[in-house]
Image (cartoon, rainbow, N blue to C red; front, side, top):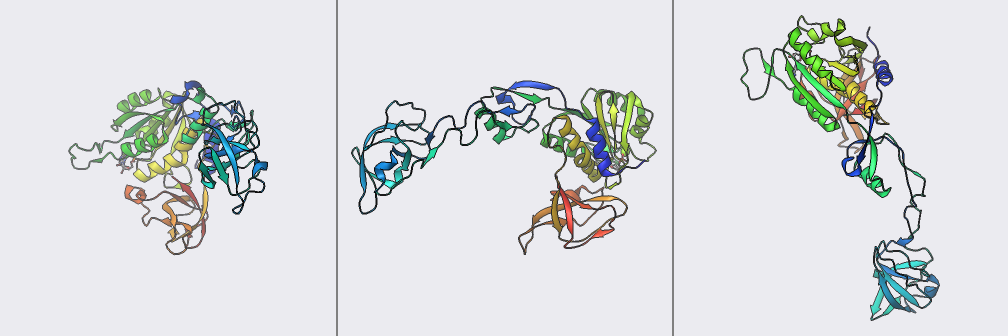
Length: 405
Ligand code: AMP
Ligand code: MG
């Protein structure tokens, strides 16, 4: 039975559980997914410190300082970042201080070096200053015990840095998914090899590896299987050693679509989650489980295959990888152009979200060709424009949803 896009996502949500958790050294955690809530062990910053290179002093000493009547203080030493001086500032004195250095006892503000003039140990100030100026207060960014990074956050450079801040020398991450990919079709030939009549290049093998590499999962490439039951059985068995198996081609209505037959026969205990979704392109996508392995059978047309990946496989991979936000984001934008769409299908049209040449506002510009066999229609696109299921067309100026890919 053909189901709706949202129902298919619902089924994926129900079927996908996060993979087991590993503890790794922080230096190995980049581009993994955090599997624990991380709390700040100590105040951030840990101590009052200077926001500028300048002079730490008592603000009351400069109360009447002005251009016409500057005040002069005696500099009694220098503190750098990382120093822990026990020298303190008293009225009439100041300490030279560098950005990040702890504020010395007695001082209540820092005056940037650019606002001063120095002669020997005498420092002249031409402006008054207030208590707290140029001081980063202990705990002002976050208090000890605060939730710093939530479980399910991908560890990008920013998060990696925050984990270091929180002294996480080791961190819990969800195991990186192992994803096997299998292309099918007698016609497929690798680049560099000679083409015989009727044969074509295996482009999907590269597209799929590419998008999976971009996501960062571990890819096990099972190469190309011929349209031959036995060969495909062997390769499917191999694919079931991974967390997820993606097959491409051979799932539609053709005489040699053996993947379809094998799945329908329940090969390796295949249990269907859904088959056929009311979308264009990518309608004949299949999803199910083979034992512990989540399996996707994507259609072979290059665009259908990629759309199926972005709409279903990628969210599922993120879910089992423990991402908190595993669904595709959807942007609301304005269409610049027109799209005709075969109802009743939710249409995902390749498009580019870009600033409009006249208004500078971000708009979705549709690619001009629809064919799901043409990979070139994806070139330069940065997402999919949604044409609702009950619309035969959307026109210039219409509000549309856009899924970035
Ligand atoms: P299928 O889903 O097997 O019926 O294939 C649909 C269309 O996609 C056919 O024209 C195939 O030749 C083409 N196709 C299937 N797999 C690939 C691939 N790996 N690379 C390029 N085209 C493919
Ligand atoms: Mg085929």
